[in-house]
Image 1 (spheres, rainbow, N blue to C red):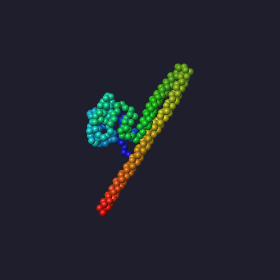
Image 2 (cartoon, one colour):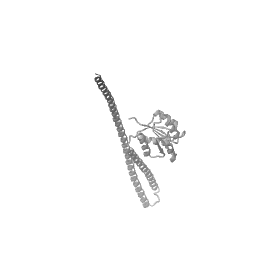
Image 3 (cartoon, helix red, strand yellow):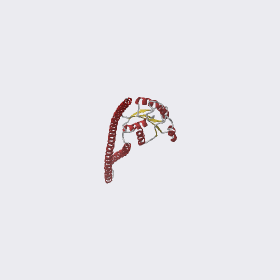
Image 4 (cartoon, rainbow, N blue to C red):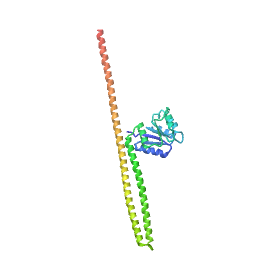
Length: 277
């Protein structure tokens, strides 16, 4: 089954890359354009299955670009989603009344699930939406927890370094200092260092566990996408076979009708001959 294509017309590079990354995980091919002219040329060249168009562009705004697409005989049938961060509540409603309206509208910023669901409703999706969004949320949560652990690990490293400096400084200042007090301070400092090292080892272990979990989830997502694509390919194959059978049946039906007409004609001719006799 051919990979479906999505054209993203967005003036902000960071946001365009954010959308492209989401669509890439859905096994969709993406093309990015930064303004209306570039987007129109890309659409003529790529013939995408869907267009994501931002209202806020550097040249003509998205409403004008949408009108241009919907008035073009070759491109007007491509589903189009208008996105805007500045549109007021009634702007989209007014645009929906026009002949050159978009198929769907999204108010930025939107969450991943909202974007994926809207795209799936327009062009279908090889991955179950609920499952995909659940895995995405799980990965995001694990990444946040992993970042926290990494910050904690860096703090522990800093603490160990400071404790080591204190120990070295104490050793240099041993002359003229109460030896018993110094020994107690050294023992206490070493104890703090050992505790800090243990905590750091625990944090490192947890960090590794989170990394493994993230890898397992990403692997599960890849398998999900792979199996879903295979299911769609099998469905297309069965649909093609059914179409062939239907065509054959229609052909046989036409031949049967032709034969029936010939037999009826022959019966009528014989009847007429009998009457004449």
